[in-house]
Image (cartoon, rainbow, N blue to C red; front, side, top):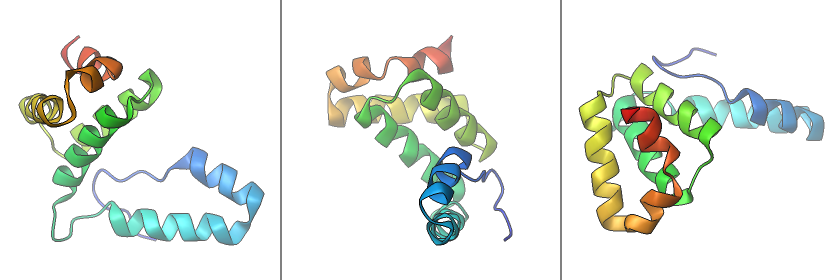
Length: 109
């Protein structure tokens, strides 16, 4: 399987899936490689969308680091990530941003 620029397989997900069923592991790998590559949307934009959705979900600190790192690996700039955070705060609400405070703290700190 070829990897797109900035694409890392979801190792934890694959390990869990493998325990359930090896076919599930392969299905996740296939889905992952389909999603996390340049397509109609460049990978960078997909990673910025993932950043916005992570804020909406109130991700924990460890996951926040992964989301930011993958966005950077895909070519997103700090300014693009800050604007993504601002738009997300406006649309999803400031409490959502506060719940995911580890994302802007990691980015700005």
